[in-house]
Image (cartoon, rainbow, N blue to C red; front, side):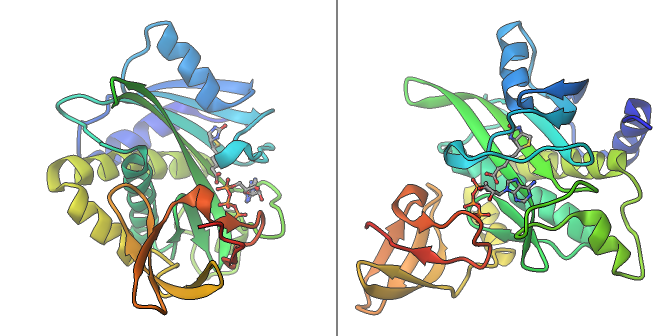
Length: 272
Ligand SMILES: Nc1ncnc2c1ncn2[C@@H]1O[C@H](COP(=O)(O)OP(=O)(O)OP(=O)(O)O)[C@@H](O)[C@H]1O
Ligand SMILES: O=C(O)CCCC[C@@H]1SC[C@@H]2NC(=O)N[C@@H]21
C-alpha cells in the first residue's frame, strides 16, 4: 500500500500546536533527492512550508557529499523554510539543531528514547535512526532560504551502524508509532516545534535543550595528540572541547575526522 497523504494531513491537523509553517505537501514515488526536488520547486515559486516526501531516493545525500541510502520503507522528507522576521538563524547549524531537538523530543514524547549525535544524527540504542541535512541559500551574509531534509529508517533495511524504528518497536512491548504517515507527521511537527523554540525562546534556550539530548557530552576526543572532553556546543554549531591543558577548544565538523560508519563516535585524526 502506498503512502496515504490524507492520513498524514489528518495526523498533522490533530497534532498541530503552532502555525509557523503552512505545510503544503507534495508526494513523489521516486526522486533523486527530496532536498533537490524542493530546491527545484522553490525556483518555480514554491513558498515557505512546502514539503516534499518521496517513497525512494536514487541519490539521497548526507553531509559532506556522503550518500544517504534510501530504499522503500524509509522516510525521506524535506521542508522549505524562508528566513524572515518570523524565523531567523545566523548559522545553518541553528536550523539543524532546532530540527534535531524538535524531532527527538517529539519522538521521546511518544516513548521512543531518541538521542542526538552531534551535529545532525538521531540515535536510538546507540545506532543511527536518522539524519538531517540542512542546505541554505545565503545573500549578503544572511541566510534567506533553507531546505531541511530528514531521513528516518522506518522499515527499510539499514547499514550495520543503523537501526530502523519498526525493528526497535518490535523489541518493545509497545508500538507508539503505527505507520509511516504517523512518523511523518511526528517529524514535521517536530521540525515546527524546533523552529518555534529557536524563534520564541532564542538560540541560548535551544542549545541548552539540544545539549540535554546530546549523547556526545563527556566524550573523549583527540586534538593534535592531546585528549579532551566534549563539554558543549557553540551557537555557530561548533563542538566545545575542554583539553587536558585546561584550554577550551572549539572544533567544527570538517576539522574532526569522524570515520564514516562509526556511530560509537571515534573522533579520530583531528587536524586541528
Ligand atoms: N539509511 C541509513 N541509515 C543509517 N545510516 C546511514 C543510512 N544511509 C547512510 N548512512 C550512513 O550515514 C552516513 C552519512 O551521515 P553523515 O554525513 O551525517 O555522517 P556521520 O554522521 O558522520 O555518519 P556516521 O557517524 O554514521 O559515520 C553515511 O556515510 C553512511 O555511513
Ligand atoms: O546523516 C546525514 O548526513 C543526513 C542525512 C539526511 C538524509 C535526508 S533524506 C531526505 C533528504 N534528502 C536528501 O537527499 N537528504 C535528506
